Image (cartoon, rainbow, N blue to C red; front, side, top):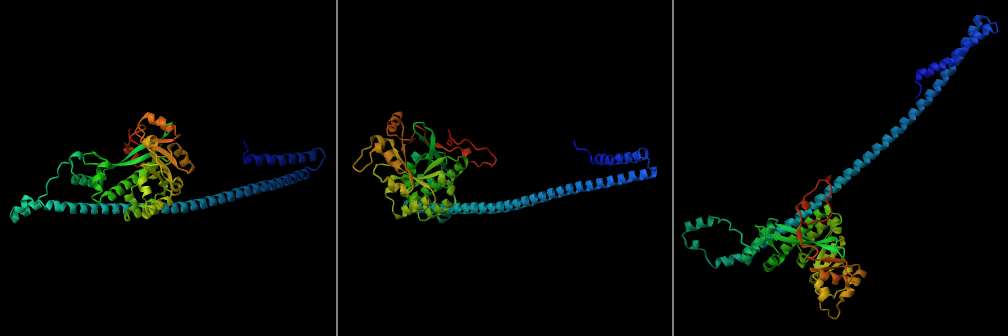
Length: 437
C-alpha cells in the first residue's frame, strides 16, 4: 500500500532535520564551537536540506502533472475518436435506414401495382362473365316482366337473399366460375407444400409449392376443377397470375424463417405471355432478389418446348435476376441439356413411370444415362410421382439422388404459425418441417 503524501513529506523532513541537529550538537561538544555558531551551522544545513527537499518535491510534482496531462490528452484524443466513430455510425445508420425505407417502400409500391393489376383483371373477367350470362337470362323473361309498372319497380328493387353454396359436384359451370371468382376476391388461396427428398436418406431438401382454392364452406377446388371452366371464360390468366403472386408472398415469409428452404413454384405459359401482368411481376421481383436462393420457378416441358420470343424474353428477365428454373411434366426424354443449362434450368423432374416404364423412341436419352448427362451439364435430376417402395429400389439403380411423391409425403397446407410475422428478438423456429402435420 503506497504511503500517504503527508507522511512522505514528514519522513523527508526528518531525513535532513535530524542530521542538522546532530551537526550542531557535534560542533559544540566535539569541536568546542561557540553554541551560537554551531546552531547557525545546524540551521544552514537544515535550510540546505529543506531546499533540496523542495526541489525534489517540485520535480516529482512536475512529472506527476506531466503524466496526468499526457493521460488527459490521450483520453481526450480517445474521446474525440469515439465521437468521430459515433458520428460516422449515426450517419451510416441514417443512410441505411433511409435506404432500407426506400427499398421497402418501392417493394410495397411494386406489390400494390401488381395487386391493382390483378384486381383490374379480375374485374374485367367479372364483366366478361356478366356479359356472357345476360343473353342467357334474356331468353327466359322473368314472371315479373308481365306485371304492371309499379309491381315491376318493386320487384327490381328487391334484393334476393344469398343462396346457400352448393357442393362442387352439384354446381354447373356458371356457378363454379362464380365460386372461383369469389374465392380469389376473398383471398381464400392456400399454399400446400410437398417435400423433395434426398435418396436413399429421404431427408427433405426442397418443397414444391401447390396452390389450392377454397369455397365459402372450405371445400378445396383443385386445378383439374377450375381449369376446365376458367380457361374457356378467359379467366385462366387471372387465376394463374393471382395464384403465382400468392405463392411468391408466402415463399417470402417462409424464407424469413428458414434460410435453407428451397421452394419450387409453377408458372404457366399464361403468365409468361401476359403483357400487363408479367412486366409488373418482374418489377416486383427486382425488389425481392433475395428470394432467388429460396425460389425455383417451374415450367412444364410443353411450355419450355413451345416457348416463343415473348416467353423466352420473360425467362431471360427472371434469369437475369438470378432465379433458377426447373422443368417438370416431362413426357419424353428428348431435350438438349446444354441448352437448358444456358437458359438457367438447374432441375428437371421426370416421373417414375417415364423413367421405369416409358417407351423411348429414337433421339430420346436413355433413362440409365439421364442422370449423368444432366449432371455433366449442371442440372439435377428429380424423379417425382414415386408412390411405391419398389419404385424407389428401381430408381436407385439409376443412381438418382432426389425424389418426390406421395411415398415421401403428400402435399400439406402451410402452418399458420409459419405465415405469422415474428418479432426480431423472437427465436427462430426449426428449419423443418414447414407444412402442417
